[in-house]
Length: 87
Image 1 (tube, one colour):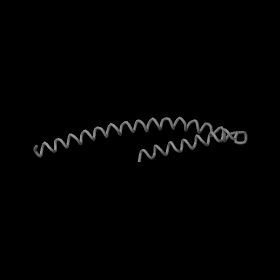
Image 2 (spheres, rainbow, N blue to C red; image 1 turned 180 degrees about the vertical axis):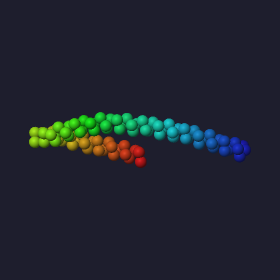
Image 3 (tube, helix red, strand yellow; image 1 turned 45 degrees about the vertical axis):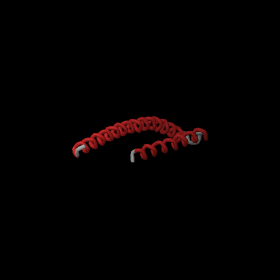
Image 4 (cartoon, rainbow, N blue to C red; image 1 turned 90 degrees about the vertical axis):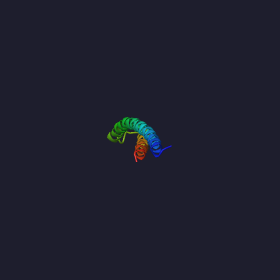
């Protein structure tokens, strides 16, 4: 095999790996985007629930406060996961 043939094979293999990596990156972006969209919906729910609790702070039951806190913690974790995936 010639020097040129060796480099052509290497180039073909690199191109294949590059294409596969590019596809995986695209799919990963879509997964992260889907995760982001879900979190954004939960963020809206969290803000609405928090606004209700803050508006009626004295009347808000402990269960409502606990639920809002749990949702907030889940959102925090979700956004941290996305941030870590994008590093």
